Image (cartoon, rainbow, N blue to C red; front, top):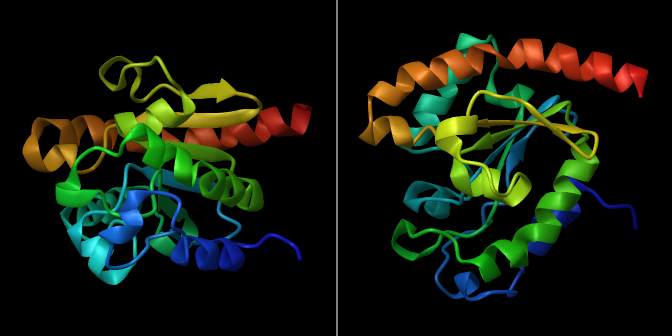
Amino acid sequence: MKDSLVKINEEVKNCQKCPLCETRTNTVPGCGNSRAEIVFIGEGPGKNEDLQGRPFIGAAGKVLDGLLESINLKREDVFITNVVKCRPPLNRDPLPEEVAACRDFLARQVAIIKPQIIVLLGRHAMDRFLPGLKISEDHGKPKLRDGQTYFPIYHPAATIYQRRLLQTLEVDFKKIPKIIKLAKNENKRS
């Protein structure tokens, strides 16, 4: 049977690869356009996401929606997911074994969608794809690895606690359309 986002969602729903399955209300595999040019990857579901089974629907989601609107996009235009598909208790950082348990799901989602750019929301997503970098130094700078363009930026939730980061995030977000054009040109040459 051919791999599909629906199949992955079902596998995530039934996953018991790590202890997060014991405390979740719902899995949050991701949602959006299966042919998106942009995939946004965050850290993990929060309380609201766990309750509803959809990514980025709380306060950070409102920030993300506004940022998408600033570059004339809607959620339906992109795909949004997380490094881990279940909420870590008390919104703690995901543990390495939890990230490892979801690694295959995320890799398969990206392989199906084939985005021009993967926007890494915060340090946890960045660590998954671009280990060894620092979000404070590398945000807003596209990185090409193994033929894929990655774009690390601050997590939208960071702006809730540090309002000054909103302006930085807005500036970085405005770069996305240009980076997509560059990625398309790069892929044409490959």
